[in-house]
Each structure stands twice: as structure tokens, then as C-alpha cells.
Amino acid sequence: MKILAEMPTGMGSKWVLAEIKNDFYGYGTVADFNDKWGLPVNQCGTKESVKNYCESIAGLCRERIKKHQKELSKEKKKPDGWKLMIEHEQKELEMLIEFINVLSK
Image 1 (cartoon, rainbow, N blue to C red):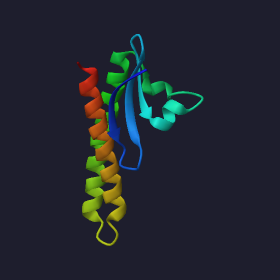
Image 2 (tube, one colour; image 1 turned 90 degrees about the horizontal axis):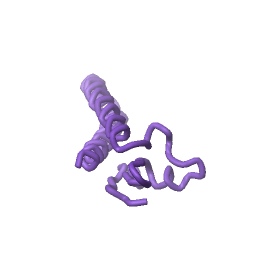
Image 3 (cartoon, one colour; image 1 turned 45 degrees about the horizontal axis):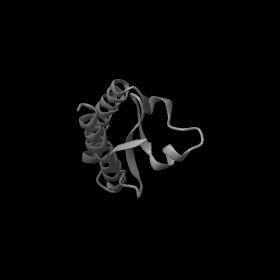
């Protein structure tokens, strides 16, 4: 297995993108890679399928960030929860963009 990129999750762990063998790639947390069942099936496959999945999830992250920002603008008393959700989505989006760039080479 060859590690191609690593990105922090923002929650004390990191995401890893790896070429596992002969045009089989995957990404997940270190715990995912160490799990006896392996990576989630939607987070591994050919280079192109993993890249396409990352692009799809990146689009969802962008939508959720917009939605959360809209809710945050309405929230006056306790905005911390929305801020945390936006931060988490932004970290995931950064990771997905980095992995897309690596897989595009």
C-alpha cells in the first residue's frame, strides 16, 4: 500500500488516500484502514471511481455548508453548533479537493 495523501479531519485523526494495489485506490481514516472489514465499499475502487465519488461528496459538502451558513445567520442565541458543523464540512471539503487533485495526476 502506498500513501498518496493525508489530511487532518479536524477531530484528532486524519484522512488517508492510498493506492492499495494495481489500480485499486481507497480513502478513509486510519481506523478504516485498520478495520478488519476494510474500507467502506463506496470509498474504494479504481482511481476514476474514487475520484468521481470524492467529487460527488464534495458537491454535497458545498450544499451543506451553504445550508448551515443560512441557519447560522438565523441563530442568535447559540450559534456554536452551526459553526462547528460548518467547520467540519469545510475540513471534509478541503480533504476531498486535495484527494481529487492527487487522483487527477
